[in-house]
Length: 522
Image (tube, rainbow, N blue to C red; front, side):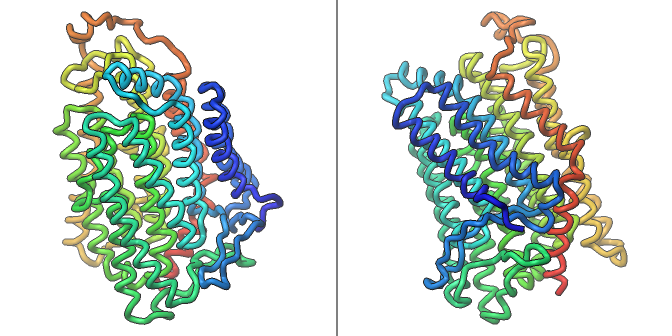
């Protein structure tokens, strides 16, 4: 159906204007942060409205179209269906809340930089870039056209690169450049693949509005023949780098660990997961044959990424670096679900995006509380017993880790259940040896995730307060509730909320996943 007003375009334009205009006039940072948060909630609120009315399953399209068909590009249209609804909700809610969280964190970060003799960019520059970054991610979730998606992809790269360059930690210039090069190469590969396809096909449209709901263009093989496999490899390799799966993950721990923590809370759960979403939205319907032939490789790579990322996370002493490697591991779950090419696996991957969005945002913001209030403390070996001084942050962190492990009452339980069902359906019972090996690898993958999650929880929060912390004046009752910590708690609660109302997401998501699975099966 078509929305009665251009709700999705307004969802992009309003936050961008608020962020940029507010920064130009130098509005009070608190007022700007809250205004931006409210504007970023618009797409999430609209998506929930349409979900509650049961309209998302058939797709909700924006009535405004930028028609570039005469140039061979197609139409720039924005829409939401079951596949994109969990992604849109994750981006909208997390970016809105982290905008408020940024008030105190970035004020402290700018003061630190000034104390070190630097001349940092202002808080207004931060919010201008932040709004651009958030809008770019929303645009990717809403896009129906490959060029449209790529434009938002590049905008997200530029904004996030500048945020790391201006406000990051350590050797931030080198790290920002490393991040830019890797992700720009990924974007270039993706662009080469889609240009090869679109210029041959005469259009870059992929998802189309149809009377029965969302439809997809014919697979690339019917238009370009054998060349479709070359296009597919370029697109998939570019998305692999963006996702930071095993083998092309090296850039992520540096960039995500040394970015300012509010930006880390968007990079790790939201931005990299959008590459997984793009695999389902664009790569799968365009290149079903190539993905089908690669499915065993995708499943194996997904499992290897989960296990590798989790094992390396266990070795980290820096809390943010541990969370960065955890993001590598969590992308393995997305790849595993999509790689099964089953409706259950694809649905599980999209729900896992939402779970990871809340879980990892909670954990990064908890890390940010300690960095801000405990004089930049990031070393896990110097922590211990912090639940006595920070009981609310300990509870939030526990919820965050439960999201990653897939334990109730977090929405992560549903995502891992669906992904597991997808894996079971992917591997036929007629091959008992393969089923046994796959089951063993799944147990190892889930076990590694639980190990790094709960060992880290114990090391940071349980036991007696370390003497070093006590000498710093950190004592039981030290935690004081404010908006800074309220955001962390609310992010954790939202993950529980979606655990309860997951059926509202699952009905339209299953419809979208069934369409994609049917394309693969022919």
